[in-house]
Length: 356
Ligand SMILES: [Zn+2]
Image (cartoon, rainbow, N blue to C red):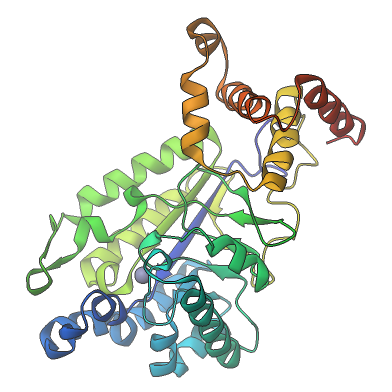
């Protein structure tokens, strides 16, 4: 087996819900408190749609992950207990849907601590997962998540399978469960004229086709399908039938199926069980280089993209995806005087000796 997943798993699907309720509107504009129609449309999410989603997941026999702002949890404590009690993950999504990029570091930490307290109190366990409201991390978010014992983040788009990001002092690995706007229901369905949100209001069948096409691609490449939805949008009855149909469609693919990481979370230091995987030296070099980059606090994809673009065309054509990234990372390390090519060789050899 040559994929990244253990045993006969070909690909993994994560079915996830951001239970924003009214918080995303209020964070965007506090004046929306004076718009009861707009707020009622949002409140439909936790009040009407989420219980229906829970029944659908039970009928399908699959777990989901629910990212819940602290304010929504405080105002719907029974719902949060119900979600956790039925075996789903309850994870952090700010207090009143604050995108980290809009806060000072102190405020960001305050919001993080507040949400941990509220969710922990209701479920009996501190959340181990975090998804940033509006998917906008700040430069210090990963450090704060590491400091407050999170095991994973789900706000970045740098790959289509879990990967490591580093945060904290000293740096440690967090698992990133990458998302993408394509696999989000809001761009397809969000329509709120008073908030100037004039989305396309697409036909559920059309969205099914988009998501199913992406799933087929992710299955083909053996990666991770991470679907982000909002009960206030996907929970409308016709759309929920579409989601149910999608789950049934995914189940028809051998070696794939919906999963959520269990509430124990990901192991600390491994995103993927590598025991079955035959590693190539190129992959070892990626790991060797990533270790060093993490220690140096370098994680800007722009820099890596620039380095990839600077590869000579004949090399660019000849290299696989993995190889291109490795070559680019090596260029960066050498340019920055962090490592020499010989030192990279030596670190790769160490990983080989360790059987990694
Ligand atoms: Zn949200």
